Amino acid sequence: MSTRLLVNQVSCLLVKNMLTNMRRVDWVLMSELSRPCRMMLLVNPQSGKGQALSLYNNHIQRMLNEAGVPHTLVITERQNHARELVREADLSQWDALVIMSGDGLLFEVINGLLERSDWEEAIRTPLGILPGGSGNALAASVHYYSGSSPVSSEELLVSCGFLLCKGLVSRMDLVSIHLSSSPRLFSFLSLAWGFVADVDIESEKYRHVGAARFTVGTLVRLASLRVYKGKLAYLPAAEDYNNRRALRNNRRLHCNNPAASLCPASPLSRPSRDSSLQNTFHNSCHSNNSLKVRRTEGTPSRSATKALAGPPDTLLLPLDQPLPSDWVVVPEEDFVLMLAMYQSHLAEDLLAAPDAILDDGAIHLFYVRAGISRTALLRLFLAMEKGAHLATNCQHLVHTKVRALRLEPHSPKGIITVDGEVVEYGPVQAEVHRGLARLITG
Image 1: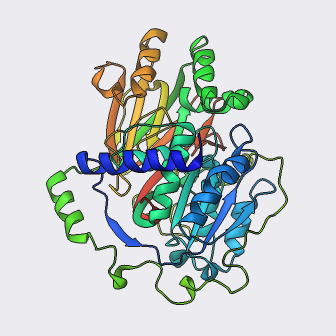
Image 2 (image 1 turned 60 degrees about the vertical axis):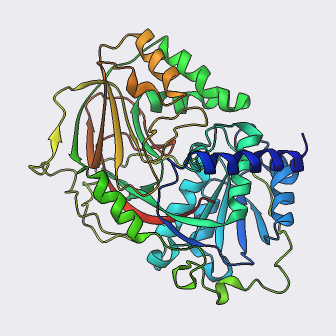
Image 3 (image 1 turned 45 degrees about the horizontal axis):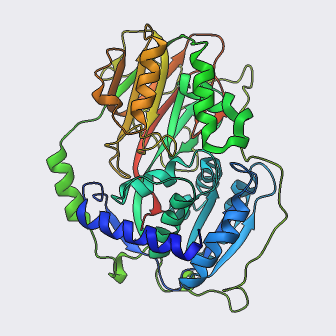
């Protein structure tokens, strides 16, 4: 199918659904990208099936050119290349940073921005996401938030490309993650322990089959279901939907209001004369851009209030101190999984948190207690494809909205992931920072 035909089909689908289903389009609209908008487009050529660069050449390059969006293509060469690049880049040259990969490359970019001395301004740089990996959770979430019917593969790519060309920008929550002996991280998608983290990492060997790797990994892990011991606690999120919607309406701004623009028509909106329409290529790589943080033995606990780049955490005490009295401690200590989500999708075909929105200031915490059968767990994940798992009334599944959480694993071995990337195994805590980042949502 040609790019033009795909664009026409997806455009019609988006317009139809936006007119008839506005239920999901209720985040805070911040601004519209300046025109012309100069984008740095980072591509990981090894993500997913290794077809990201071909997808760019066959679809995205044409879409951006036809929309009159100048962009510079950067092909990542190694693990943490994108993180290092945005940490040192002169961001005044760019109106937006766009990632075409799985979710791991965006993880690098966000953490690189928040490691800068000017992090407060840098993290306001609008970010765009184009699905080029095997998970593509944030891309699927952005498509879902638009109110459109589910799509996948190249149709999802074209949908996200269409939304990118529209250039509407919204706030997005980020979550700070504290580990025992590693620097603080920032997360845009998820924190996982147990079954979900096991499947995510152990299915890497099936990367060649694309998104189907998670289905294969789920079946393999179900055959040998594990139970993990640990202590889970959280600070509940106060729920007042009427007040929240009123606040959202008061904050909503017109797209064409110059005072509201995140990209004022100053140096940010003026492309350089010799590079505005030219694509610059860097050497390709043989890395999947994953970040693996290894435990440093004997390092003392890092204080949650230690001076670091990025916003301060006001809800967290150091990991080696007792929990505050207003936190809820989960009575169970045997778990199959713990999953903290801040976007709707865990993968293209997994609608894990159907009520999530970009800037709701909440972590959607799920955990499954030990004792669930393999059949019941499989039913949960099958229902999650349509976001119906919360309606199954599974007695082992618990869902609650929180502002902060702490997990202390007691099992000696296991996997913890942040945005699908392996981090240090051990105590971990997290706090949501509402609307910290900016995302191009169309």
